[in-house]
Amino acid sequence: MPAPYPLLELPPGDFKNMFDYQAINMAAAHNAFIQGINAMVLYAPTVAGEKVEPFVIFSLAVVDSIHHHHDLEETFYFGELEKKLGKGALAGSVEQHHTFVPQLVQLKSYLEDVRAGKEKYDGALIVEKIQSFSDIMVEHLNAEIPVLESSRMRAVFTEKELKDIDSAFMKQALAKIDFNTTLPLSVVCGNPATPWFPPFPTPLKWAIRWWFSRKYSASWEFGPLDMSGKPRLPNTES
Image (tube, rainbow, N blue to C red; front, side, top):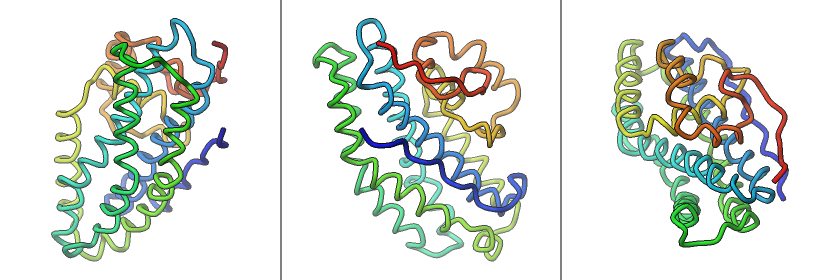
């Protein structure tokens, strides 16, 4: 079993500064994906019985979150940045997506079949499928951050332009997710070092904790944080 992937070091700067924000926010998002992958690898081999379905729901939420993020990058965010950075400025990131997204989709298909009763749960197979793409994906998650470096943003964008892009991105992101899975996942796969991420308004944060987390409450026990955002010790008992 691979050792847990380390979290990305956050770029320097101020999260509230829109020029610094692009790289810092992206690093925080990538760390949430790493937290999720690490949790899947940790728990997959020992999950059994009544814990299988909640774990599969957790795992699907992780996979869907990663896939959704990269899809929005390609269909919206990168295009908006390239209007000022130049056509093809983010092409390298898109090419990197193609090196691991197909394997990610294969993992999702297997997890969906397990949940539907079409496949038998096999934790070792899940780890194997993760290993087929995780090294490449984590390398990409690290490589993408310098592309959004603050001085590069400041050279071509105004603060308002970046705020407008971010606002439109969040609107599209929230329009295409299942609030009962993606939002609780964002809490339990968070990072205590970045309590401001995701940048949700306080009422939504409370709604996540007390409402949206309820439907699949057993699934969020696999996250490294509890629903209040506090770290918890892993429980790998079957």
